[in-house]
Length: 436
Image (cartoon, rainbow, N blue to C red; front, side, top):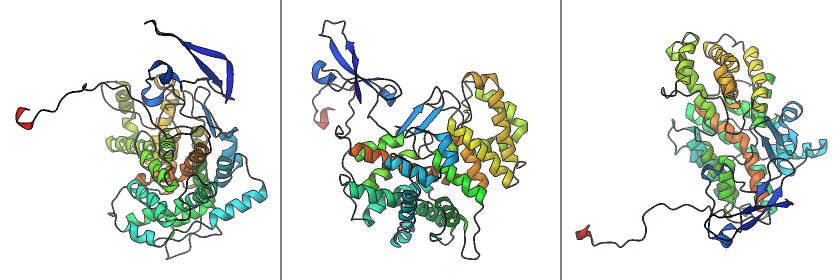
């Protein structure tokens, strides 16, 4: 952080002494006002529900410019990474700050590949869940359980422990997601195969059976890899902030990531692509493309309670750059599988067309977001809707770990402890039960 020559002066109309607050400049993005000494000097806190104007940390990992529609991983635009790099190269970049050389990539891929198996006891742990349990309930349990299997890397303050935990988590998440899926459909678990790519191995563990050899489709594997890359990190969102807050207590790294999984489950966060697909199914039930005009009318009516899922974003006030890339992949996958005329996908494409052309949506910048397209792609590949968020968690794991490692290595880091504005009862005395 670079201190600025400019200072912010806080003054009060009640005659309290004014206070100078330091200003810090980032390399890009808004300046920040340092309020750390505010309470000590004034006895006052700031109030910012939802952290709309609060920077909780300084970071070198990911930068978003919502107005421009820009997403940078370590300075590299997501558009370039998604086209020129695979997911494991992106993981290396997020973890270590630079893209790998050919030899660094080979060594990193080798390490990840040889950690993809999970302890056989995980199968018995899974059996404790109902077959119809939501995959995110299962994943929260499985990821948290990893801390019980790896007693050699529990120290979050040890860089070597954090490194091995990072490799293990990136390697084992696809195996756990595939196991959770196979368990819900009653099929045998498929063990990882070391000669396949990260995404190819995941697809095989998801869709292969012992009955016949599985042949990965390159177009679908590439689509899966792109989904992973586009979801790898996204700055200080709810789940990342949860991982940082949980990790700030010094907890086991697997436990901190399990907390991120639990937070991601919410429909306003990782469940958004699931919500978008459910919306499409609802329109389909009501009559499909023929009823789309009626649906759009309801969306525009504030009193109807009908929401357009998979459009717009809290941060992006422009077209989400990830959505542009996912749109290309979406059309490529539908074409490869011959699904352009599938009723649900025809409906999705018609909804996309209306949202991109209708003045109501254009004026409000309600563009299709990455969740809209990734949901359609995953449905086309054959991934059931409840599993979408688990795949998001798989992809985001590397971002969570990178952010957690950065926080632990920051000399300014302290256990997170937000303050509050208390508006409850003042001190009062307890009456004996007979007098209440």
